[in-house]
Structure formats: C-alpha cells, structure tokens
Length: 623
Image (tube, rainbow, N blue to C red; front, top):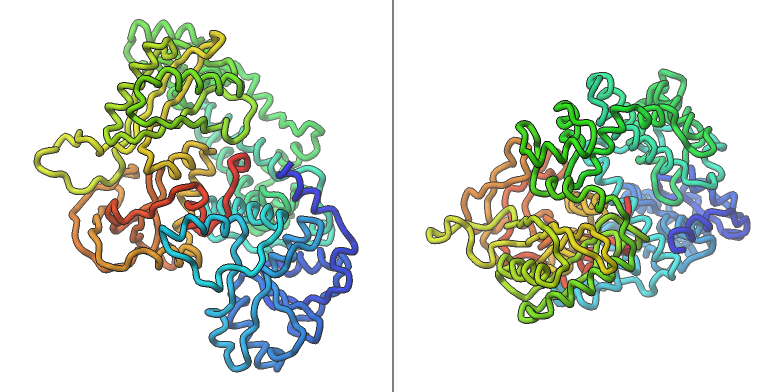
C-alpha cells in the first residue's frame, strides 16, 4: 500500500496549484517542473521576475544559494515583500502526493539585503521527518543538531514517503554512478510527449529486470565468450542509461516509452552516448510485448547447455563459474555431480557449503513459508533455552523482515552478551543438534578487516573478543518435517543496529549504504564535526592489493587529522580518512579511527540519521 501511494499521486490534479505564481531561481529539473506545474493550474513567470505573492523556487544545484541571492540583490529584487522562497522538493512532494503537503519544512529564509554573500551559511536545510524522529536517542551519541536544522513543523505522512523515495533514489544513483559523471537532463532532447504523462506501469524497471536476466544468461553461456561478453556489456550499458537521470527506477522518474529515447544519436536516437541499434531492438521488443518477454532470452533458456548450467547454479554456494567447470568436466545432471563429490574425483571444486548443497539438493529447492520461518525461530529459542547465560536475542531477518511471502532459507540473527562469540556459537550448535533441529552445518567467522597491532602473546589472533561475528550455515528440520536451510548469524549486542541493517538486506541495498559515506553531504559533515575533537589513536593502513578486500596494518600513531568519511560494516560505523581523486573521495583509506572512537548507534534509525538519510523501512529495501 505504501509503495503504491506515490504512483497514485502522479495523476493530474488540474487545480492543485491554482492561484500560485512560481519563479524558478535555479533548479536542475526546471523545464520538467514548469510543465508539470502549468498542467496543474500554476502560473510560471520568467526567472527573477519577482513580485508580491510570488513563490521563488530554489533548486539543489550550485545556483540555489549564494549566487541566486547575489543576482536578486543586484536586480533589486531581494527586499520585495510578500515573496516566499521554497525548495523545489515541496513542488515534487506535492505532485507525487496529489495534494499540497506542509510547506513550512521547505521554506527558505531570505537573507537581509547586503548579506547575500553569507546566504549559504544561513539558508536552513530541512530534514525529513523520518530523520528527525531519530534525534531523541541520537543526542546522547553525537549531541543535538543546531536549531536551524530542525524545521518548525514536520512534513505529513506523504512528505515522509517522498523523503524515503528520495533517499532510495540518491542511494542507488550514487552507488551506480560513482566512477562516472551522471548525465544531466540537458543532454536529452526533451519533447512534450516525453515529459507529459507517465505510463501506467514502471516500464524502466521491467526493461531493466529483463536485461539483467539477459546479462546473467550471457555470463552462463561460455561457448562464445568474446561475443557473449560484448553483448553483456551492451546490455549493462542500457541498464545504466535507464537507471540514471533523467530516467530512473523509482516512482516518479521518467519512464521509457520508445527505445529511440535511449538510442545513440549516431543511429537516430536522442542520447549522445546511448545504446546501439541491436540493444534498442531488444528494448523495443520488451516494450511491445504484452507480457514483456524477450525472444533471445527464451531461446537461451531452452538451450540444453544453458538448462544444465541453470540447474547447477541452484546448488547452494555454486556460482556460474563453478557450474561451468562442472559442465566442462562432463557432468550433466545433479546425480553426476553428487557421485563425483562422493568419490572426491579430481577437478571437482566443492567447498563445505557446496557439499551440503549437493547432498540436500532436492530439499533445498522447496520454498519456505513465513509460518515455517516463525516455527524455526520458535524451535531455535526452545533449543537454546538451556544456555540462557549467553543472553541470546533471536530475530528473524533477511527476506522475512523485508516482507516476502516465502523464500528458500531462514536468516536467524542472534545477538549475545558474550565476549567470546566462537565459544557461544559452539554451544548453540551443540544445543541445536541435541534438540534434533540441526541436521548438518558448516561454520564461518569474521575477525574484521582491521584489528589493531597484535601483541606478542596472541600471534594466532584467537583471543576472546577478536572475532567480530560467527555464522552457522546449517541444514535444519522445520516443524512439520520439511528439511531446509537456515543461516544463523551471531553478533555481540553492541553491534545490534549495524547487524540488523546488514542482515535485513537486500544485497544491493547494503552495497548502496556502504558506498554512501563516499558522498560528501552537509549531514555527513555535521556528524563528523560532532565527533570528539581530541587526538586519538589512528590505525594507518596500506592500499588494497590485488583487488582483494583486505587492508594490512602498517602502524598505529597519534593524529590530529580530522576524518572525512565513515566506513559502514555489519558491526560498526568507523570514522576514517579517505584518499581523494580530484574532488571525489575514493575507497582507499589512509587511516581509520580506533574501535573506541566508532560511532555508537542503538537503532537502525540512528545509523540512517548519522549518514544524513531518511529511514527506509525494511519492506522498501529491495533494489
């Protein structure tokens, strides 16, 4: 229901802005907004033609601050009475909601004449209501925000939904476009037919999903690697185009109606760096098909080789590359793979997880309902009741928390007050086995990527407290007899907020959240300024080597350099100093703060708040 309301808000209300006079003073989407406003009864004046009763609209670009107010002052328009300055988000929020939302949170206080140079520092930035809701608990961690950051009145429910959608769009766009400059709308030749009206279905998402399936199919087909790789790159480029401005995958973004919109200009399209004609043909086929099918994808799905690869990739822990290796060894069925694994034949790449996936292949193909997940949690709580001294808290995470009706595994997030997580996980496995809940398992653990300098007496790094988390990848018997898979993830209770965020997913949402601290925003700057300013022990790190996700410690020392970013993991939010490439932060970390200097967050809302984002409910975290 919540996800559908913004779409209903896109229906035209021709009287929504009746009687309003707007003047755009800088907006990245001015051309589109002007059209949408005029369709809804507003009068849009020429730029900087202010008079009493007008609304001056400030966008989010560089022209929304000092430069705009300087121009107004030069033209003698800054001191006109009866002019209200608002941010463009009020207009987009009202259009999406289908009604006028509370504008107080979007009003910008105009500077006094002669003070335009200081306008940027005094223009209040509004905070979505979902961010302000976390301030109560957060003040104990980073201190309260300046008074100018808290709006006098908060947006209503529609405004909150819009803030969530804007957060999702910002996360996705930043994550996908980090290494390339996003295109602006000016690079696309706008036409009234493309701007006016939105299609009834989110065509961008449909096309992107089909193209993603096609990319996966190309990766699976290893008989023509060069051609398949080229076709996969072409499809990925189309996905990138449809996921970036002026298009997008969120409600309210412009939806593609004709493949010519993303076709390269040299082939008669509208984009300077658009897709080629063959890719455009595939997009056109998806758009023209009533069921949004793609013939090329159906042909590949019916290919005998592709069908074998598809069966192999359904084995728990088996990816495309391992499936290809099995096929090259002459295996054609799961029975062949099971026999090879049983005889331990040479060349078979079988990890402990894959070995379990092969052994219980048929059982793991059956879906697990929400009732069965809840039953598994209840059985786990009952089985571990005898180890109450560990202070266990059990939460159903993953797709259950995201609201899915069924899945193929159960994600059990377990929080403990014990400092020795490895010993606690051993007790959990023993208790599950004794109760008959656990049939088989393999273990995993994480010590974190930066542990500090080791002492001479703990060279093996096995002391209590070093392990950040433990995981039990298990095969269990659900109430009712069905056999299935359960991932038991154990964390210390101090990591509750970060573990809950990570274990809820989705995987793409988690990646976007980890990338977000590389974007420099005012809210992130405020969070970093609120950290303790005294000198602290900093762990100085090397660059990552051989593209491995590892960082090796050089030394630890005192440093007065202020951090410029955060590193978000499933256990902590750590201040770091990142290297720059031009004006951008990079993934390379020069140093990171000691563990005692990590930001303490008690809830997921606080994590979003520190990062300057609106809180996204679990059921909307599918990207």
